[in-house]
Length: 133
Image 1 (cartoon, rainbow, N blue to C red):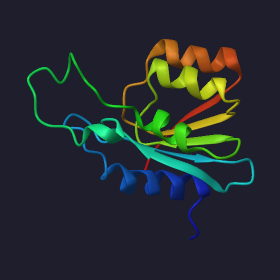
Image 2 (image 1 turned 30 degrees about the vertical axis):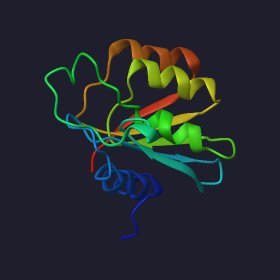
Image 3 (image 1 turned 135 degrees about the horizontal axis):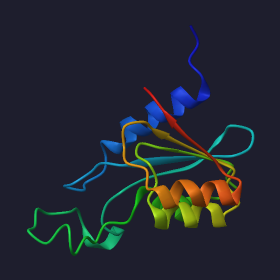
Image 4 (image 1 turned 45 degrees about the vertical axis):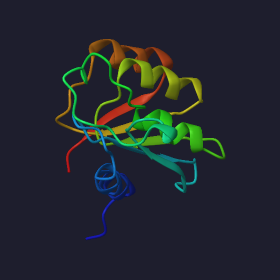
């Protein structure tokens, strides 16, 4: 049986997430245009000029990582319609995604979705969907 585009893009994101150097969580995002073509990809980690993450007792408090969604948006070369993310987007990332004009966000089920993030999507008219792989 042929997998859906959502299934394919989320599985691609899961593979891409293995490139993340974050010691706490590996996250990836694939941004797609209205025709279903990949616009850009990103995964979480420290800014380019800073090298990879290193284990630290302060990682939770002083995280220098850039979120996958932001890394993908920085590289986007044309308008995006849908985001496929390995984890539920955080409050800050969903605001940034909505500001681009995005219409749909899919994430892998099982990650924690903040109530205010879900409500923000409802208020903004964004389709937010958890997906089981």
